[in-house]
Length: 102
Image (cartoon, rainbow, N blue to C red; front, side):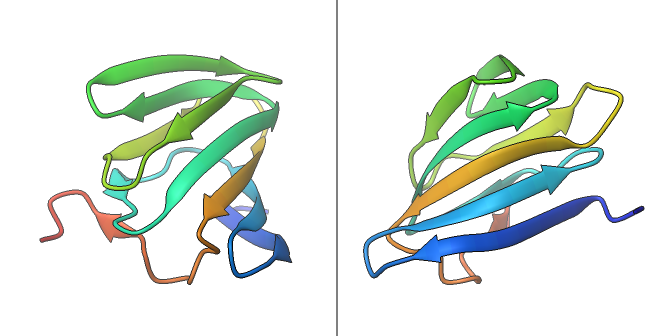
């Protein structure tokens, strides 16, 4: 119940993977070097910081995050923010590099 971020894989092919992502507080700034990402907020609200953009997100909003673009989400709601993340190609579990991570 106190876990900040939880990602649950829902579906995977060679070309894409879908994950249920729950964020209690905030992510650290990071990039995905080899994966594009579409995120859709299923419940909650927050702010997606993507490159130089700040995007207010509410239930039903979505965003495309190209590979190599620094990003992070900050939950602004009272409960856990829940979203779907679609990675292309399928997420390998290791392509999350902290911002400035070399």
